[in-house]
Length: 297
DNA sequence: AACCGACCCAACCGCCATCAC
DNA sequence: GGTGATGGCGGTTGGGTCGGT
Image (cartoon, rainbow, N blue to C red; front, top):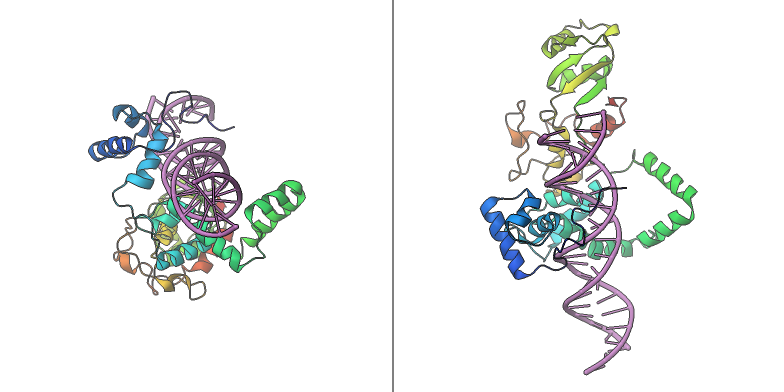
């Protein structure tokens, strides 16, 4: 059971389509006070709407930077590429299409692209049929889930569930080549005996081969903001057609309109994903990383 | 003109993650 | 660590519109 809805139906709140007056109240309020604190906003702005509804209305409709309608052929192609890569991660896809909202892209996919693709590939059963099949045959469902897991190895879809990871258990053999090739920021390192070790000391030990076999299975606290490979990856400019081609190798430059989070290690952001700097960080690396024997804690 | 089904899309719902206490 | 509040996300719904008969 989940939580109760944020606004119950008997609170006397308005529902359904928004009126022009409501839009104006919301727009004026957000322009004056900024986004956020949506629940309080409804009272302060004098709106009889639940906060969630206000947030959605603002994000999907009232925001000044929103493009509406007329999704271009280029945008459609980009959506297809991104969907192929990310699956139904509409917010991530929308993040790569300036002015487009996740809701709009989701609707566009469901009403246009999805059907188009289904026409092109009539063998793929539709969603309803799939669900009915699952309901009538739970074993087949389990099997499907199993094959899905197995197929993750070969799938091009990157599962991007936004989960913060601050700790990873890692063995010396695994860490050593990483340290040798990439700068990794480490807050502190805990050895098996629970004694903390200064990272610089550890790295220099690696460099001088002073770490012995009994130092295996270290636990690191990464500064994940700096170890930002996945966010770097997701911030790539996929609008460059070459981005997803070239067989598993990323060859795009950064989208300069959407710079990546700060990195202390990379001086020139725009060159981070250039051919040279990407050496060793291609799709195969992602696969290797996710399939590695790290114990993501 | 009236009916009906298909389509579109704004809005809603339920769940999850995170944060503050 | 537990709990409630809040924001964010993806899936789904339902009302309006359009086109065909």
